[in-house]
Amino acid sequence: MLHYIKPSLTMNSRDPVFSVPGCLRNRPSHILYSMRLILPDRSERVIATATVPLDQLLLAEGINPLGVIATRDGALIPEDAPVRSEDVIRLIQIAHGG
Amino acid sequence: MTRGSSRQEAARCAVCGEPAVFFERQAKRHLCGTHLIAETEQRVSKTVTERNLIVPGDTVAVGVSGGKDSSALLMILSRIVPALPDVRLVAITVDEGINGYRENTIHAADRLVGSLMIEHRHVSFTDLYGDTLDTLLAGQESRSCTVCGILRKKALADAARFAGATKLATGHNLDDEAQSVLMNVLRGDLLRLVRDSSTDSSGRFIPRIKPLMYVAEKEIAAYLLLQDAWQDLPECPYAKFALRQDARTMLATLEYRYPGTMVRLMESKEAIETSCTGEINADPLRSCRECGEPCSGELCQFCQLRRELGRSLSGRGY
Image 1 (tube, one colour):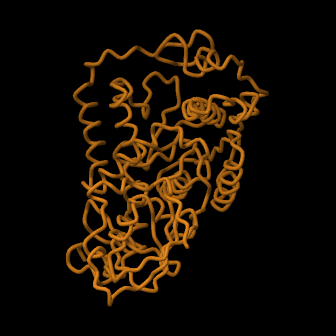
Image 2 (image 1 turned 120 degrees about the vertical axis):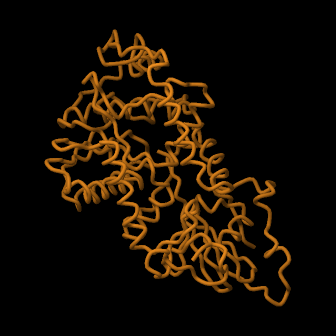
Image 3 (image 1 turned 60 degrees about the vertical axis):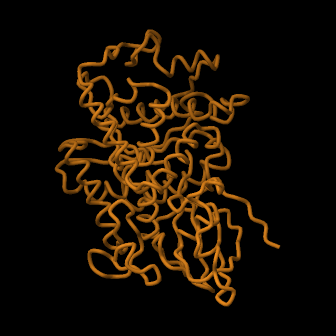
């Protein structure tokens, strides 16, 4: 059981723009994989997905891609980079008050 | 590679063809680390030059909290200032006294400024105003950003003056500036919307400059991460009380849907500034009747705050 605390940069998931994209919603069952998304609060989310652009995955999670930067294996990746099964994507929140 | 060509292949830098690390949404192009760093620094240099933000002979006080924006600002200025004759940088760090937050950023500031071998001055609310922000705000947390903003602005200005500075540079980025434009519109504050504090014909205050005003927050984070200069710091505990937080969420949503929204908002502000020149009846610069500092009304913001808090706000000074 994974506990997921929404970070403050999450967006309104009821907003149609941030609804689950078709590539995730209608994936065939035989290409289900799981990847690890490490959120800014260091909690982890295991997501079953096919290869998909990172920004689409973030939107499906209710996170604005502009509010985070993402790394894979310690290296910065663009917000539209394709992410695959077995990837470990770490998100870093960029907006800090003060 | 542009966004639409292939979503399944790794993107390449639009300049050199190396693997990309960043996608510029407005320009719809990808950049590698080398070209992201170079273009960020070039944009800041262009802003400084075209707007005459720094001129030969200036002593530039840089407000360095240790957070990402001020750290990037100091790093970039330390690289572009050597090309400007007779310009000196002085870093100023203000300790507001925010328990569990500011200690970490001050350590980060100390490390960075030390590595760049720049003169570094520290001031604290306790020394200047007799107490920490945490104590001053007790029971009034909802006003935190207003109170902190006024006190920090004065602390920075006084420290800059004390250091002999002719300019005061802060790390406000494109997102911050666009949020301010939106907030001033929402408040109906036209005077503040068009006020320009980067020049001072009266010679009564140190002009405040914002060299990162056309660099997006996300670019700054990437710029630091690429140079191993990113510090994973905590969020200010008072940030949740700010109207800015709502403006930030709203603008980030719009920027994602309509890339370029923030830049266009800034351009609109500048167009209003230009067309309002001489048309708006701004109050002439006066002197605060209590402390003598320049202000637009009878009292400066600091003296107004002193009255509202019912405290003298006097410490042992520098």
